[in-house]
Image 1: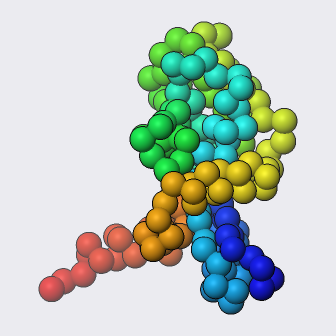
Image 2: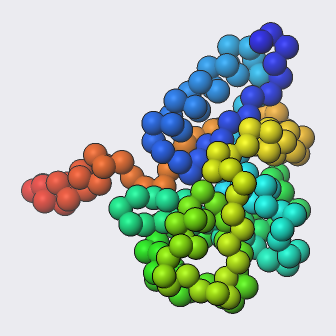
Length: 184
């Protein structure tokens, strides 16, 4: 452990408990041995796993099962202007049927929920579903992305690693209506 110089952790999107435990553990390891810590997005990992299948000009729509009949989707496109080789944008919770109708013909889709999307009766034949060979994000891909990002950043400017959730917690969702109904 004393020789550890860099710890890379996937910051999400993902489940609340899994992300909290994983990131807390990674931070404890990094801080205990004085190593740098870099967080990579699950979306970046999926994009990196599929890059050999993507036409150069295309972005990739990455889908995660958000539960409650919703998907969490994000767009990843190749980038040379960001520390990561992927720029992640348009992260949102969506209704699958409505979202599918917004996609342009030829759109490439991948991610842990690709099977859920491609099995829908309203899945369009003009969309490409790039299935992952595993639903478990590969640690080697995350590590490689972390190394690429760390090489481009000044160690004094490493971003704070925080969890990237798909939605608020149930407790936070229940708090909002209660706050709105409170009298000043």
